[in-house]
Length: 228
Image (tube, rainbow, N blue to C red; front, side, top):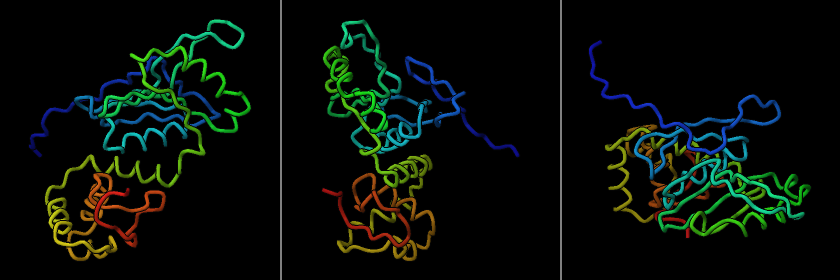
């Protein structure tokens, strides 16, 4: 079969300052090929836990995200006893507004047991504004698992363009203001799963709204416009 496949571009290696060890038996490790708006081409984003992976999916699915870099930045700071320490954040998220958030991800039970918030406050005080505008802690109480699964599904769907299905849905959105089932849109289009994927993309683009903390299925009711 002589078909021109075009130029195959390998993903850019992880940009993390600290390499993730994939030999752990105690927690999940993931390495994902992602599309980050600030990067020309796919890039590998490594995560050291399932919680980090879910956080990554939710952040990358945000339309206002510009860049996401894992295992960055590394901040030198003085501990509570005055000893010199270093902390490497799990993510640095840069948004289209220009604001940068240095993010630490940790299960709440572990963070409480380690009094991590107090330690993170010292790290935040030592973090230059040129590196991050704000330091934040994300725990499992901040991440909804269903929302993370929906975000991961969107990131998979958006990799495959489908101009015809997207155009059909855009025209439908322009001519109606009523809420409807995704399954009804699928039936009306005659394009099956292609319309389901177009709806998924429209949800994350803000043209349709649903509760992303609930599973998105053919029975899901979608409404015009973004969730306020």
